[in-house]
Image 1 (cartoon, rainbow, N blue to C red):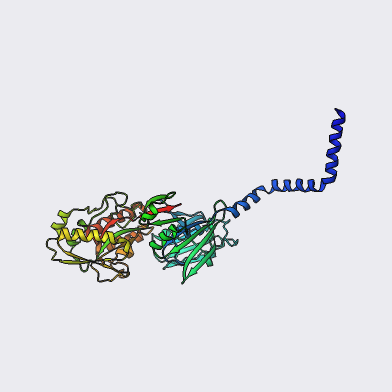
Image 2 (image 1 turned 90 degrees about the vertical axis):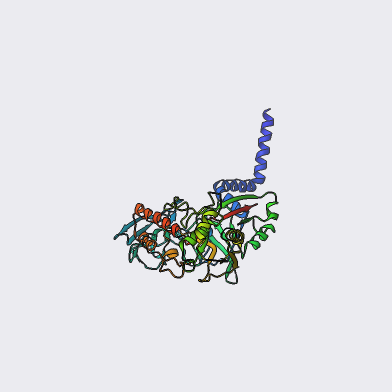
Length: 441
């Protein structure tokens, strides 16, 4: 028994003596693997992570990137909560508002770095807003000064901040961008935490090209307003419906100079078919999720009898309905049919890409800003953006007060009144929020 043990020991020592260099290398390699296992695993994950390809409709440059991309690349000084109230973002240590809401003293956190590795300085923060002056006190502090109080200012400061060439400080950084005819063709982002694979966004001119790209496998996720039959019938797809109550709405804007009688505009509103889905139904120009939203305004639910009563003395025989986006043609056809049947008029549908100020009725998307401020859309002095040519002194006064009032309770009451008076005037027929379908494989 002892001889067998002795023999095995001698055999082991002989093996070690002949192979000690290889054994030493193995031991050192094992120790190194144990010490650097996290770094090695991280490198492996980065090199094997699959690129996620997403398609986006529209023509964009680096100056007007979609929010879902720019918000990944960097942060603003504020961000919008679910009910559209601005809060300080994660790059701001504190904010002190002084001088009757005309001076905003921002203090940045001291551990911020750009994606190029350089420390974020206060002087890197550039604010390009009319009537705003910025002075830099030190590397962490700067002051924004306004000529007069302007309550939407904090919402405007939610726009992501960049250095040159889209160098940001967000969770993702830009690694590649390709252009075609001056517009972005595709853009790739890398997750700075390394927890997820790269994202690549490819851009297409219209929804038809976007759905073709998905069908051909160029991209693995898209968002569209309608699901093509050939895609809907595919297996292995995930389709989620989203109602966009945050950025835009569908409405018929009425030229108040040509359709100057309020009863006529209200008649058209009552004669316009609207969604029966309460989640899709839009009542006014302020988001249904906003802290300033008024749910008790005039709804103008579809009522042919009421529309006939209000329209009987209008003297109108024809109306031109202008459509700015072909996606809205089904809405235009439904509206045209209802107006002709209920009001006994002739409706001409025109499709165009530009707004003619002499239009009768304009079917298009209306924009919803982050802040409830609606000054540029409805104030009588805003000739370029007040497309309905609305001129109402009471509404003008409310819009002016809404911009100057900082107290949230007072400001909310102003916008509740604004919505009530605007819907009574009926310069636009609010139909619905657009519905989109996110499709992925």
